Length: 72
Image (cartoon, rainbow, N blue to C red; front, side, top):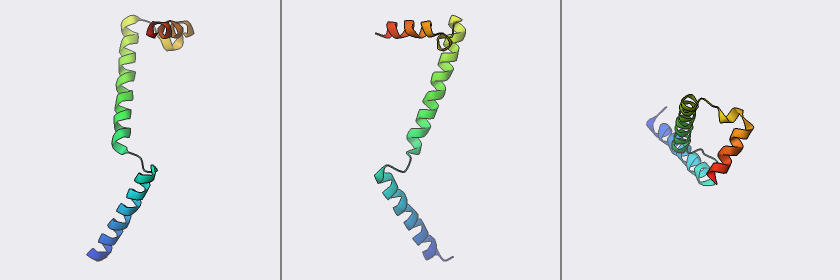
């Protein structure tokens, strides 16, 4: 492949990605990575809280209702 062919391929890929991103069909990888990291932190904090309090609200429907009432 010549340098010009590589340039055309890269340009074509860039154009396709730009169009897909504009239409909302291309994932925002940075935002996705941040969401995954946040999810991991929340799960870790939940597990630490469960160990600290000795109860698992997700396993008990009544505890979930109590938590919901506290939030309001």
